[in-house]
Image (tube, rainbow, N blue to C red; front, side):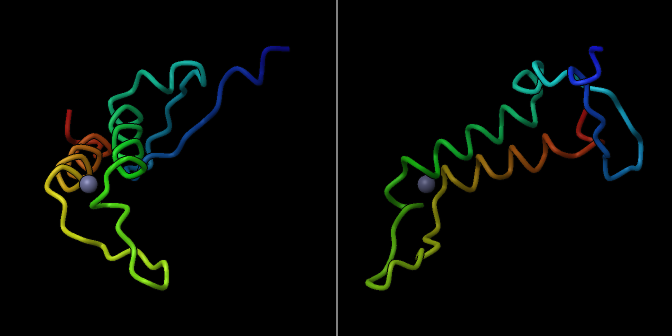
Amino acid sequence: MTRGEWQWRSRPTGAMYRQAIGALEATPEWDAYQRLLTHGSECDTCRSVDALGVNRNLPCGEGARLFEEYRQASRPTSA
Ligand SMILES: [Zn+2]
């Protein structure tokens, strides 16, 4: 049984496609998401919190750029 090697994902378009779990990191969407997460965990601006520990949501050019890249990559029509 090799059933666990594949998983089905649903896209906003409703189209189903099969993707190897091991290949997830190779998708532009995943790649962009990882860059966004990495930036968010390292950037002093994005991590800035107030006295109560609440994120200030400060504007960050790099963070906004990475988010836009992720948004574009996650769009089915971006290709
Ligand atoms: Zn940032």
